[in-house]
Image (cartoon, rainbow, N blue to C red; front, side):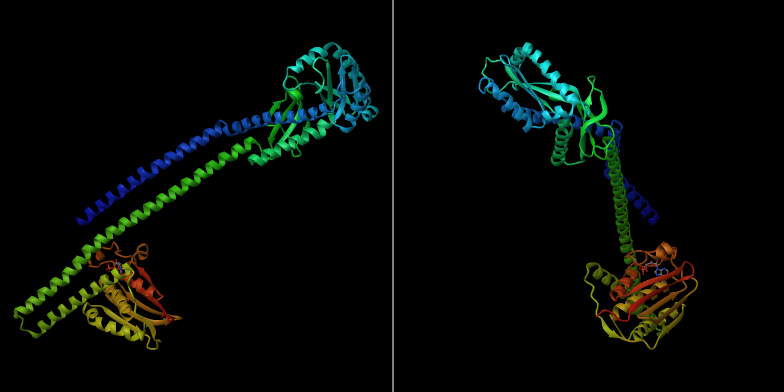
Length: 558
Ligand code: ADP
């Protein structure tokens, strides 16, 4: 009845524990994992990482265009300041200055100066005119065309440029050269020192080969390096394409960073203004936005999986440790009731026999002696029990001290057994004792070793049913002393063998339930042997019997 109630109580506690763990930990954690899982899934589905990267690319390309323009403006502006000024330098000097500009700046293909009064001066790189017939043709053609066009349009062009914050106009066109079709950009600009009412302007063309081989590769490399330095992450690769007017780019790049390799750009941006007609392309070097997105998703799932695993492990550990605590609490309460029973029985026996003797009605000497013996035996049992409890509490408080002395262990075991022989035989046990007479002395705590042995003998006596047999053996095995206590009692299942040395633990055998005990004996035995640097082992077969073996090292601790 009592045990049924206890079982119900423990099931209640377990349920409460599961509910607490479930509601307080598992549910919120699962919800978190679930929400996160769906979040990552939605990022994967909508390709959000790629979109983010592409947006960043767009921005980078817009900034890149600005920087490229700035560089080209700076070059053109620098050249502008070295142009001759109509009205200041004499007309004769113009040609000299223009020719020297060309020779000092190989990035220029043509330079020209227009003055409404004096007409057009048009100079081109002299060496190129010799080497490239297309260039020579271009020179002639541009000279003629600009001469005619500017004499008509110069006025409105100059008016227009005067209104701008930067007095430049850029025109782009494709030109033919020995190397094939090339892209050229031409700047028209106001001259810095010309008086306000004079219609004059200068112009220059960026040499296509320079743009393709030097200007763009350098500026792209700078942009990519700067981005890596400022923001880190994956290295980028950039390219310049020649774009059609409908925005399509042909796949032959004009210029690119060293590691472009092949493949398509992730994002394209059409250039306007100075480099109208070209477009910039960008991609990752060695990876792609798609790949990065995929890796991110995979990583997130791995982290989520890892966290879930940690959480589940944590829960299992928490559950196990709490149920262990609960089991211990239960064992403790069992212990209290067991000990109370154990104390009460010998006490009432002692009281009963003492009172009977006191009344003086017992006259038969033998009877009297038997009663005395019972009183002594019961008080011995009480002492043993109380000693166990005291030892246990000392061990628990970490205050247990051992007194190691050089000891003839054979004699110690023999004396202990002698004190119990009568009890053993009286209970109908066949008793065997086998002590090696030639054992060396060892340093042990005598009282503790005797107590360990007594505990093992008491267990053998308590847990034997039909076949009553007890054997104690002491012998040497290598560098250890072995003390064996063998019985043919009820035995212990394999599963419980590991637990019987825990404090308060008692097996589920019905005989054990009906036998008094505190569950402390074996935990003391283990503590004592381990304090001697040894250990205790059990071999047992349910229904056949058990063998407990203490091993004590011969070189015991000082
Ligand atoms: P107690 O005997 O006071 O219950 P112990 O710590 O000495 O406590 O033993 C723990 C449990 O181990 C016992 O309750 C019993 O179930 C089991 N046990 C110990 N010795 C034997 C034995 N010789 N044969 C069978 N079972 C045993």
